Image 1 (tube, one colour):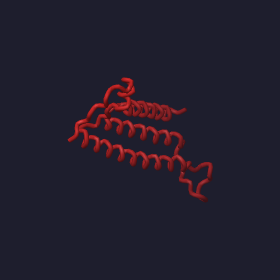
Image 2 (cartoon, helix red, strand yellow):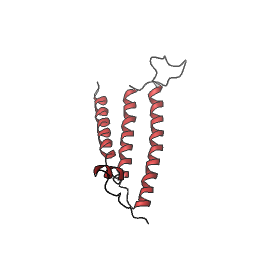
Image 3 (cartoon, one colour):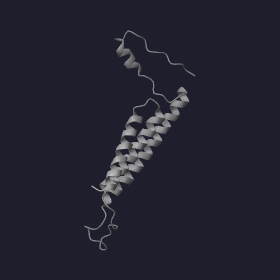
Image 4 (cartoon, one colour):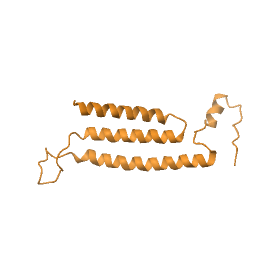
Length: 129
């Protein structure tokens, strides 16, 4: 394993660890940031999986064994598009949460609070604006 692959592997690990930590937060903006970090980590995994760079895989100009593998590149482009679309959706949800509730924190589920008390307690009443 070369030094470049070790460095990229460490960066991928750091991106996934930071992304997982942020995904577990209550703030929706931190969740979006965590999702973006994991998306970048996945793209780096695809870059490492693609192997060394090579000539473009054009039929008749390059021998098939010498050409670069186009599959990781296609997967990386697909991952970028999916990450962008899901990030836009998550940002819209966070914006809607801020508009409706004044902050982007995810509240505790009412059902969880009721289940913890054996179902005797009434659900909290939310203020309406």
